[in-house]
Amino acid sequence: MPLAASLAAAGEDWPQFRGSARDGLSPAAGLLRAWPEGGPEVLWRVEACQGYAGPAVHGGRVVFNDYDTEAGEWLVRCLALADGGELWRFAEKRRIRPNHGITRTVPALDGERVFALDPKCVLHCLDAGSGQERWRRNLVEDYGTRIPAWYNGQCPLIEDGRVLIAPAGQALVVALDKQGGQELWRTPNPAGWLMSHASLMPAELGGVKQYLYCVLQGVLGVSAADGALLWFFPFKFNVAVAPSALAVDGERVFVTAGYDAGSAMIRVRREEDAFVPELVFQLSTNEWNSEVHTPILYDGHLFAVGKKRRGLFTCLDLDGGIRWTSEGRASFGLGGYILADGMFFVLDGDTGTLRLVQAGTSGYVELASAQILSGNDVWAPPALVDGRLLMRDMGQLVCVSVAAPKEAGGE
Image (cartoon, rainbow, N blue to C red; front, side, top):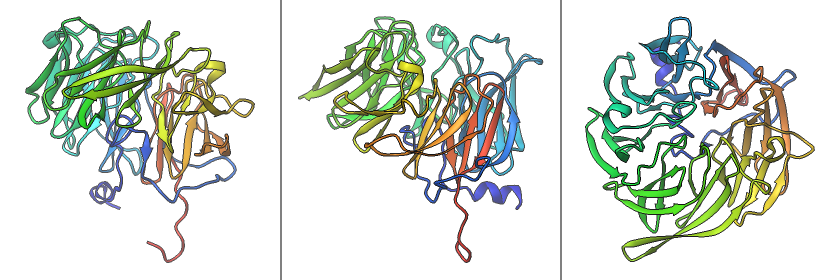
């Protein structure tokens, strides 16, 4: 099939961190519920630098952040989903030493543009067809951002003709025009809160569209209309916060982090023109927390790899009760996961084993497992498009086929 045809043939996309809706759910259907001996078919592999930068996919193009250690160049690479062939790469001389990995963020794609935030907090807008840079925003120079320990871990958010980012310097959150990068609005930051590794998350609380963000001092919501700070709830995240805040309904927000932060459910009530946040419950690290990944909300429950006891995959109810864990069956370190077609694809962050787990609230049911990657900090979030599952470890990006064979005579 010609390249142009293969790109146009792509169906559902995974255009940014956690997918189109930033919820970790793929619309894919017709996936395998068991794998042949040796695991799902590996379609292609490409080398990648040490890091946790997961891919985004749009229109048959796979885009991810990378680094060329020998050349000393930060990269954005675009590959063909069909065969892993490189379509283009953006390269910029940048000295970035390994600091528990180098890359750790997912780009955002809209079909025409690629938005990539590099480890030292420069936001690049690239042409999706050629990789040429259209505009950039240096958050350190433009907003006084302080580069976080272990480099930037925030993923850009694209929505409604704009790209959103949290510099957390002179401006807490900014909305930029996608076309030219002009600032549309900003959220003031009088307290001088610093950038965290969490990403902005869309939510609608009390009927008002807003964006959630976590700083070390707590969690907050800003107006999607004009960036006004709507509410703030103090919560001690300690050293770092990587998981993003998650709206579980029209009032409640769940937060979790490592470094003894634990977890909490917060209710954000709207009282006329004001929002009033209050604590619903809190879990200590001895009860449950996640260090790296944002939980997935499914069937009125939260599913995630917990930090406690070697990374058990866990189902929690919305009152903080643990319904089940994978204890005695499997542990996952700090591995990533995704939900599609009623199944979780969960990576073992220590070994690179991929496990297929039935999505349900009654217990841990493993459907299949296979050694796909070589292990060693397999923390990047996976992506799933057109029956192709994309995963990476500290040395390679791999694409495997998880689609069920089509019946004879079918489309």
